[in-house]
Image (tube, rainbow, N blue to C red; front, side, top):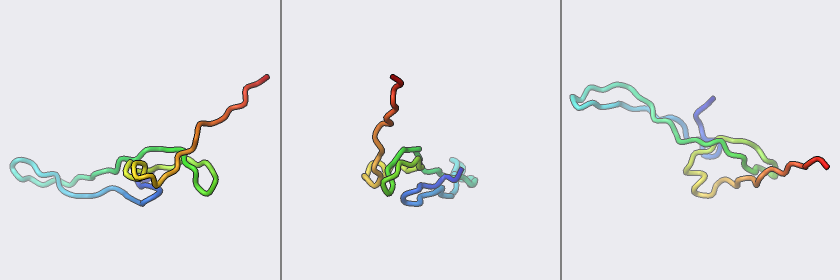
Length: 71
């Protein structure tokens, strides 16, 4: 599973973890992704979206699913 936002393309960042003694070790910062049912081009699809895209309103979330009850 790719750790990448389907809307803005935000992905993992790399850098160093710095200890108190200033020892450097490589580490990754992963984006805060959520699986969301969203409306894209009139269709409801499940996509991975970062929380900044959700908060800014770049994603239109789909309404609740309508399940027909048997008569």
